[in-house]
Image (cartoon, rainbow, N blue to C red):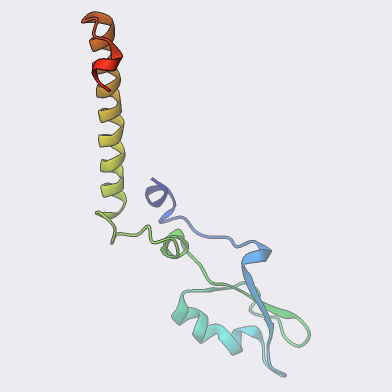
Length: 116
């Protein structure tokens, strides 16, 4: 369910998620890490910072990148739709068991210790 909702959502990092560093002398953050950020699909939050200002980089741009660290992607049991199928089967099997035991004990009058 999480992958279906957050996979295409853009990420806005909190200060705890940022990688912070200073750019070399006479360079801006953009000139120093823009090629890397583009190839790594990372967000450079303050590209014009230079000197004593800190460069701030967020390593995620989409929810899919964030969810990759939890292994919730398409590789497991059909991805989001496989997980949805397991959820539906689990829900309906529990409902069927509730109705069966209610019918068996209330309508048929079976004693519960017959089952255990």
